[in-house]
Image 1 (cartoon, helix red, strand yellow):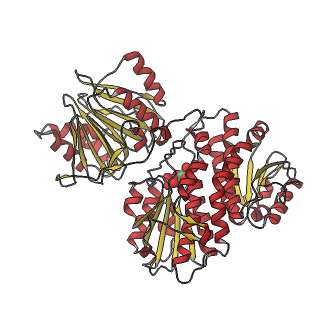
Image 2 (tube, protein in one colour):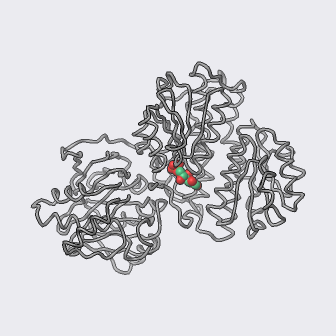
Image 3 (cartoon, helix red, strand yellow):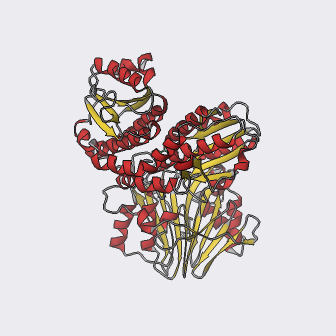
Length: 605
Ligand code: F6R
């Protein structure tokens, strides 16, 4: 978590740093800060709160400088105070550092540095870094040598950018946390993610672990972990700068919900041919499936709900499949061998729990495929193969369009795998499913345009709790509906398999606990019965399903989805629930794009 940015070039850096940090706030927003070389030293502006606080401070203090670094924080070591905000500086103020990651041996380093006369002013693990660089500058004649010696002392994960007084350059390093280089004519950028600088350049190079970079006004030099100069491939990303703005929407989340007809169209493009039931993945070399007898699908949070969906389709195709929460994988996986295919699902490609599971799987001999949104992410680079969901940038912390693109990708991938594995069989109704998938963008337009979620949200808030129930393939949608609801409304919400309600949770049901019933997909009649069991105990039922579908008449309120293929109905129902969460959170005046305590990219275990 945390986002870092750096710039060096001919233009003033301050505006770029602040705009870039705003684009990185999905990574954390507890505190923010920048440091610039301003001609007479390093000027640091930092404080608790989000990036707008620094923007305001700078407007009154008129900061400027052509070389600078910036940071937006998700606190790990020390509360979100002004003192703990980055950049952190050395005793002399001659060195300023921003850092994303965790320095695991910070306590020993702090003790060593304190014994050598360094005084600490924050609770952070990061502060050891500027002091270390300063310490080694006493014995090394070159700054680069001191910088390298400092990072050689660090254990843990980091992406670091440092300014040194009187040097018009940025020193940076990456080990286990993302860092991307952006190249423009006369301007160079480093950031945790591309949206930070995509309004200036779309030419990027993904740095490797162990790389050290020196950013100057006339270029960027990259060195590998042995100090040998290296070139990294420069790619042109097809992200459009408008994609990272809010447009005319009040929140990124609402924009991203509305973006789904187009993001799903991109996910599907070139991958389906309903006429002959064909599924194609240019990005998947099917050799990866040779000898596979079992599949593990591994993910966290919302991506786990997409994984449940994909795993169910694989099981239906006759593939032995298990699904795991990534944080449990190392202990729960059971036997893993070269006959196991491990599919990690991670929109960011940087989630520490998922990366750890990926490494565990690879270490135990499994073949690995990652399903991700981010080209060049750690998961994409470490897995044997990657399949991209092509959702485009998602800035709102609550995942919406990446979830639907994950689900669509996994629907297609499950059928591709079923075509390739000798003992597996694709769905009999595959042509109908593919045809329905192609209609999803149109159906989504209809759902978004006609949704009554905003009206519903006017009476929803302030209930004691909210339950979401679904069966079979609508169960992951119920779980995801509850996760989204709690994440952005801060109301208590839980998702259950509808058949489980009577085995315990029903004790919680009262007239103060609305129940959302997913009347989509399969065995809908049974879910309707379970919902009525809750209704009998006083709960209002909010049904989601096709007009006139089972449960429509029994529901106290009803959100419609087009009457399409049952698998696709679930996807459409999910979008109705996204809108319910959004409008309820808006009604409650919650900070929808930046829910408390959360960050989008969870890079700690
Ligand atoms: C919830 C949400 C999180 C993520 C989870 C995994 O809206 O976004 O639950 O799904 O942290 O993140 P990725 O997919 O990046 O591995």
